[in-house]
Image (cartoon, rainbow, N blue to C red):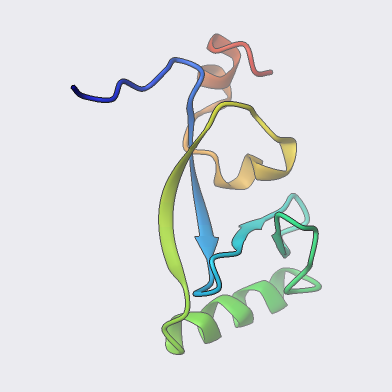
Amino acid sequence: MTNSISSKDIPQILHRLKSKVWIYIDNKYTLIDTHSYTYSDNPTNTLIELNEWINDDILKYEVRLENEYKKEYQKMCLLSEEQLKQRGFI
């Protein structure tokens, strides 16, 4: 049996550390986890952190399906604004 993706599922790219904490870029372009812990203070620091994590090989990219649209995930969402409107999220 194959899994079907609901029309309500939203693909989002999230970053996570080896500690399995989900990291995303918020609307201020800072790194934050799902517990509201921040990893950067500004967009420049975000780029520095991401580059350090890549160099240290502690950054993983994954696609995660969400069944709700969270405004703070907007930078990581793989659907266009029009697609989100069609699905009734915005």
